[in-house]
Length: 486
Image 1: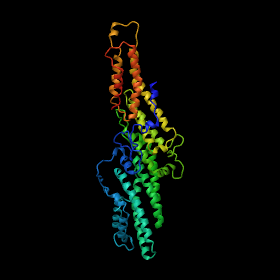
Image 2 (image 1 turned 90 degrees about the vertical axis):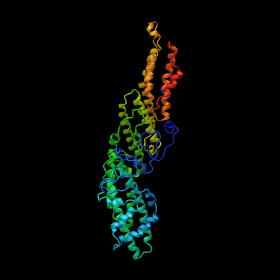
Image 3 (image 1 turned 45 degrees about the vertical axis):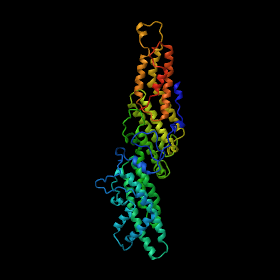
């Protein structure tokens, strides 16, 4: 049967269309794309793509200041300033007298200047409870904050090492002032962690919590040992971040169903939510250690309400979330009423999901046989598409090829292919507008349709008394080759 030719293998699904293996950022949420990024190596792309879906970031370079919130746009030179350790060391030397005893300058003003040099002076404008963090600013703020904390940690360690030698009263005073500056800086920087932990459960809040957890857990214990601090504040912030992240993970299934606008594409193409969520899952895994702690409940044991990160049994968190995305796609595909369009939609979207999974780190977190199961599912969609869309067309040929012993003059004069031609034109006119973005899938579908329709048409031409004006087999093949151009 023709359907036997519609086999899907990993080599076809991944890169079989000659496209690149992808860039460094997830697929754009602005629309479907057959090629997509294979990794999410930094928070830059993720946080631009995954704020609340109803509040997608503007492409404008300017960032509006919300009323009552003192946040300011990040300067374009931030990264170069953050990487210049020598500059920060020189600034520290000028500002340390304000943290000596007695202080030589207003301490609050000096702290503000110190933090502003890292482009995070805005943390002082947040209240002690973390303040209100503008939703659209979360990703950018977390990104700059994490870089600032990392650089600040290196500067404090370097200055601490220099100040200890030689050991005298002046060095002791320098160390005391350095400890005061470090303590004030650490307290101010924790305000962002508190604000992120206080965000409502959402996909973007999960990414922010995971991104903040790692820098706090890496920098604060070392600083506490260096300056003999208590770690209570940092421990409380980390616990709050874990609790917030767990709430977000538990809310992901509901978010998949309702977070993205589910307007169905009428050409059967890949729904934008596929690029959105598959990219989101990749970005979620960029901080696997903190995500593991969230899922493990902090004690190495799997929580009762969230699956494990690594696959086991039916699969872990990644497989579970992808399955939920597939289930929503299947449910929503019922809104596509034209015969065969639902199957083309599911074929496109399943193909896109598989490509994005196997070409990224997601593949490591999927159970054995996951890809093959979807290849078999795609074969089923092709068969169902033929049954729904082309079996009724081909059935008209059976009647046209019938040669009864006695037929009326009226029946002999009528075009026996009229019903077939009408059904064919209806199907072709609709399916020319359907979209199959993958060249691999287009070739498979066109070949399968041709193998299903053309032989039946050829047999009909041979068996029936067809008019001389009937289309040739070659003309039929050419017409079918124009399907799915969108």
